Amino acid sequence: MKKRSLGINAFLNSFRSILNLLFPLITFPYISRVLSVKGVGIYNFANTYVSYFLLIAGLGIATYAVREGAKYRENKEKISIFSSQVFTINVYSTVIAYVLLLASLMIFGNLRNYVSSILIFSLQIIFTTIGTEWIYIIYEDYSYITIRNIAFKILSIFLLFLLVKTPNDYLQYAAIIVFANVGPNILNFIHVKQFCTIKLVKNTNWKYHLRPILIIFASSVAVTIYVSSDTTILGLLKGSYDVGIYSTSVRIYQMAQGVLSAILTVTIPRLAMLWGQQRLKEYRNVLSKVINTLEILVLPASVGLMMLSKEVVLIIAGKKYLNSVNSLRIITWAIIFSIFAWIFSDCVLIPAKRESKVLRNTVITGIVNIILNFILIPFLSYDGTSLSTVIAEGMVMILNGITCWDIIKDIILSKDVFYNLITSIVGCIGIVIICILCKIAYSNMIIEMIMSVILSVIIYGAILFLLRNKVILNVINNLKFRLRRK
Picture 1 (cartoon, rainbow, N blue to C red):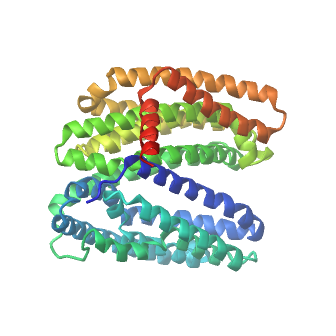
Picture 2 (picture 1 turned 90 degrees about the vertical axis):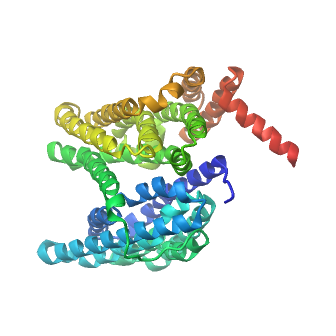
Picture 3 (picture 1 turned 120 degrees about the horizontal axis):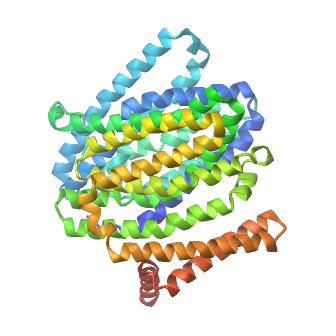
């Protein structure tokens, strides 16, 4: 199998994440004006309602399949057997999800107004299963995923402007969103034959697969509960206004986190393969590169977002949401903790088959997060919710780090990681100075923000270069090598 570049994959996956974030930013202003408030409400409720059944159908299969399947990807016969077994289990969980969904529609009469939208969104369940996107992640085929994603997103935007024109067109809107999100999965099932053969099988080897799948699923449920609890508790203790302010902070925070985590995602199958094949020296080498690279990206991204929080809120949400600026400044620090918590869990603990430890750490953090919300929200409202998120993410990072310390100790305590951190902190001081100077120099907010970003990137890169940061020097040397080859 052709070895794919982690750098190119990271770029493609980041680009795909940015596209997924831009899609709602393009469509929402149009939809909020065309659809009625009731229509938007029905759409959002149905989408959220179906997401719980998507979780049931998915179990922990995607994460588990990437971890285990990466070991077999160089053997078509073994990967075909493994993929068919996992796919069959996924089909069973999909059937269970549909049974529960249909039963809930018959039992709860107050869902009657949402039935049509729920059924449209429920198509995501079957198409997600058929899509078997975990195969493409195992084989690191991000070029296909990205091109396919771009094509369907563009087509969906055309369909949106063509078919959604009145307040009653919320069903068309729901169908277009489903088409954009999972329509490409039909192509996936056809295209997957180049990697392996997937079919329903009688022998699914339940005893081997089910326990780790259910543990990963339990972790997903725990994450969903503690992530959703912030908004739920804030709404109960304060009200819809506070939820709206906090939701704006979270949306911006998740956008930044999503772009950075896309870089991490592409390394997971490579690390899972190396660990599974016990190529531990190569594993530690790749993991060290991941930690060092994210170290010099996450810190400046967080500092930059904190410095430009007001401008970002005004551009994305408008003046009505200015109260979310402080909340965003607080929650921005959670990006650092969440990214490294994810490295320790998905790049170390899960490949090492310590998913039960991930579940334990997630449950402990979830309980602490809920308690903190009840303590902080009465006094600090949405700022308190942001603070509880930062503390929770910091706690899960520490717990995951302790749990895999025997594996990561040599990397974390290495001179390279320490010097990388120092150079990044010095570079971040340069970003703070640049942003302050731009606020003084430019009265126009858009120009101020553009110049702050451009000059911050330049000064940060220059500082790292002058301090001989190895990651930056390697990037420059690779660019020089490619230019010479051309």
